[in-house]
Structures are given as C-alpha cells and as structure tokens.
Length: 244
Image (tube, rainbow, N blue to C red; front, side, top):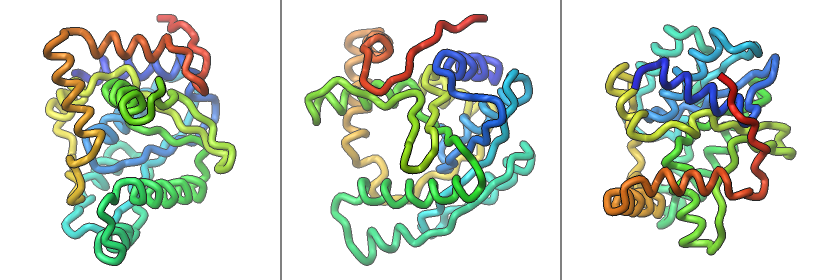
C-alpha cells in the first residue's frame, strides 16, 4: 500500500465519523508496532492538506522490558517533526516479577492506558488516536459474540467524559494486510514487543479464527465489517457519507 492510498482511507474515516475539528491537539499512542507507526504516517500526511488545522504529538509508554529500543522511532519522529514523549514505567516488573500475574493482559492494559492518558493531558492534547484497523474491528465484534454474547465493537469516535478526552480510530477502513504492505514498502522502524504474553491471547485465537473463516468463505471479513458499520451499535456516532 502506498502513502496516497493510506491517506485516502484515513480521510474517509476522519470525514465520515467527524474525528477531527479545527485546533485539535491529537496524541498518537506509539507502541512500536506496525499499526501505530502507520497511523503516525497517516496523520502526519493528512495534516499537510486537511482543511481543519490540527497538531500532532507522539507518545510511547515504555513498560520497562529489557531490550526495548526506541531510538529508531525517536529518529523517525524527528524526521517528521512530530514531538515525541517516552513515558518510562515499571509496569512489566510489577506485573511479571512482583505480582506474577497468570493473566497479565487486562491489568497491563489498564496500567498502560492510565499512564498514556496522564501523559496526553500533560501534553495539552484533547484527542488520542488509536491504530485499530478493519481487522481489529471485526475481531473485536467476534470476541464480543463468542465471549460476551452480544453484538458490539469499539466506536470510531468515543468521548471519555471522566478524562475530557476523545478517542478516534482513523485507520478503521484499512486492512491489516495493507498495513503490512505499508510497513514493508516504507521500512517502518518497528520495535517488536518483548512481552512474554504476546501472541498467546484470546484476541490471537480470534485473529486466527477469522483468517480461517475468510479462507473458507472468501469475503466474509468484508461482510462482517459491513454488518458492524450498519449494525446501529450503541455508542457509535452517526455516519456522514464521504464526499470526494
């Protein structure tokens, strides 16, 4: 996937779900993975021509794992002229060494999000962009069906009143396969998570299940995505048709 195509998908999401307003300061949570780095490129590119002016900040919550090197990401942010903040924490030590959690993902996500939100507010941002793509939205819907018995997925735009912060997901129309292609084409400085729980989660199981369903029933992922978009899910904003 080329940058122009990425920007087209991003513009479509931003316009249809009214994600960006004039004067927004948007934080991008950078995990080090392909998705968040692609999102950084997408919003940096959109910023150059989008009619509503906005500012970008990049923020990484460093969980404290040994060998997690952010120097190449720091260099990328300098190249893009996006301010970059690294929040140093001891979350990994607390979860794996002190508490020895057998199911660490939920607590880790909660602590990581708390540290990220605090940094976002300190940087004066009113919005945070998450790098969830189309596959994430469909996988979340499947997880909700399988484990909760309800039809649900996270919203393109959500206002968190306790934090006075709006979450946006500008890559919701981008396939994960295209993100992988973008990473390879532009040689993104991906820094793999050293977390020992990485790849052994319910989400990974559902990701593999969706891939199998799509192999056996070509196009099923797209049909599921359409079902989510048209499903009138509680909390989703109204969709405004995209105008080219």
